[in-house]
Image (tube, rainbow, N blue to C red; front, side):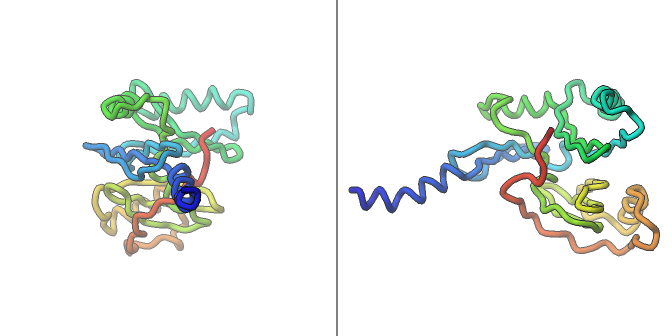
Length: 200
């Protein structure tokens, strides 16, 4: 009996460590992983917005308040959920409709505060620099990276055409000599075990 338990123990430990992920898409919710570890509620890319706010002109004690004002002007949601990352004087924000997400959690018999909410982008592999097209659960995301930091992000329901791709790079402020009208092959859908940054 002891021998059987010892052989079962590594499997149990893996199950205890495995993350149970709930994936919220535009019209459905699915689960992946049968582990007993922490739970994550992963938002599909069309369910949230991304922005980067430069706050270096705001005194440090007032930055949190200034950021709140900018978020209110930026998002159209009555109640906003957010994933916040501070990088020096910049605030990176992923924002979503909190009422919509909480409603989906309740429909799946979860307490709204029990799983951690993670925008899908945070589970894609981070990069040092460059422009990338990434396959998402739904559609595709363009990403611009500089010095290990996400500068810009845009979502398309289908593959972007050459005009959309070049406009994305221009809007992100990439130098003309670094822009390309050739749409790259999208990176395959692959999630890391943990988000590449923790929310503040």
